[in-house]
Image (cartoon, rainbow, N blue to C red; front, side):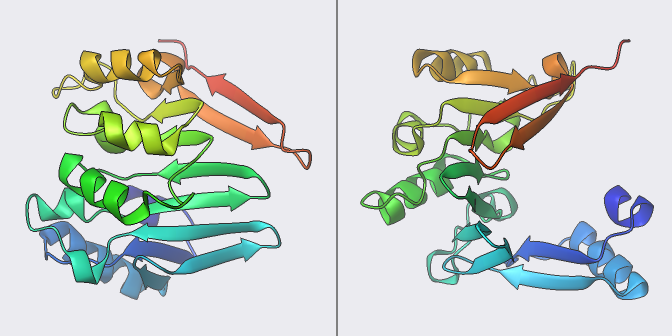
Length: 196
């Protein structure tokens, strides 16, 4: 809500929602007042940004609706593709949704990504062995607040990422994380830690 209220947003891409909430109602109130275009997407769609840059929408899927913890497990999952560079965004999905995604995409390259935005702030309910094996990422990003009440990221998940040889960056330790990919697909990661 803060992003919509504070920044000049022209378009919003949001996963199809299967459960109403006060936040969802407030979201639609704000976008209507500000005249922001809303694109509601689900699995199988593609969002083209420009030449050589697009998102594959991998989840949610109306035909495989998850009822358990529906808001998290039906979160938007999409893969950014820029030439051979890929990054998987996983929202707040948990093990239930990860298992469905593994089954749905196991014989494809859809989940395989160089960079993984770790699901649910590194919660113990996500980043299963099967999911990580299919994604095969080299770098993981965890968006998490310092000393948060949930104890995110979970130590077991951090150890699992390390065991798979995945270099991990966390916003609580590394600050804001900027990823630069040039035309030769060389990746640079910059950290912006504000001194406390």
